[in-house]
Image (cartoon, rainbow, N blue to C red):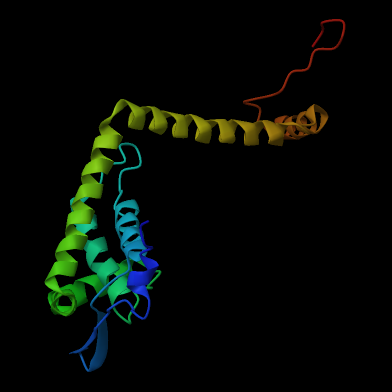
Length: 194
């Protein structure tokens, strides 16, 4: 009979050494290990945030690099990139990048941990690109567009459900009297006269 792995983990904890670094007078705590579920979240966040072209869904290499740097800060340090304004967000990124902040954060992440994360990221990007270039990816893209258009059409129909032609005719009559008579609604009576 096999034993449970719980026997191996009893009295043990996840080893996560925190390295404290300094940047611009601030203490930066960098975690040496990210739990596997958090790695998964980090990778998915980077990929989902790196699509600039909603038509092709292709990933943007510059966005991948930027979002990866930002994700390392958000997931491995005691700081969070939480700027909402896009211009300020990009400016903060450029300031931190040119002043070596992201390189400093990397010095706090053990090489084996970082290499494993990069390998996972590269594999997921590759799978994502293969999927989006596949027939299944193309079909899903088409279905998403169809569903979005269908939702828009349904909203338009819902708006028109209570459309009152009499009210529109009154507006058209007033517009006609004001000299705005380009698009007048014509209603035929039951005898076929205008």
